[in-house]
Length: 233
Image (cartoon, rainbow, N blue to C red):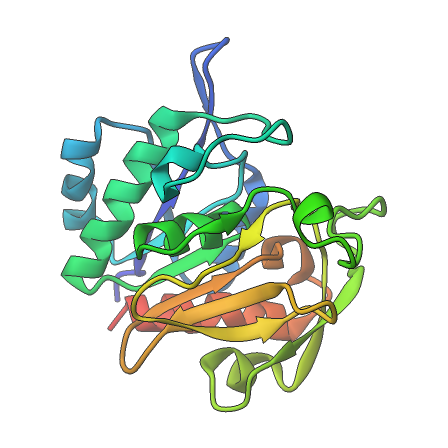
């Protein structure tokens, strides 16, 4: 039986003319029974073509999203903005919505997912959510730094239980939810940490990096196993 093919978006290194991807994403998909397929950046109008060769889409981490894509002005807190990556991934995500492809979105990916659905973002948690906890941990990324509480009745609650320890490596976050999405997990300070599609939509997004946590936490591996399973039909 063929393994489900999971398309992984890649970061860009324009100065060296390279695409970049942390190996942990590939390892997690392989451990869950899938086959990772890297999706290099292409012009937005060609993005949908990738969906003909993959069974599911994994939106990976990276830099900040250009605020004009969600109707905002840039602030001084932005870093590593790559509009060409944003345009490609937003087009790819919207095509996946239209085609009913399963999506797992991680860190930056949850933000791409939300913007693609018409939502917006906090550009900088420390300045826009003054009483927020530290969402950019100093300890190694394979160590949890805070808890998230899942929302009863959501897919994340079924996979993780009522709460789970997560790592935290971001300064942006979902603010206003996009169409067709619901909150699935919250940090103790109320920052949205998980979202998912409403109804039968096969869309799941997390603000943390489960690919760094799954070797020590079977619940994090369950996220990938669930995703690969639904991608395989």
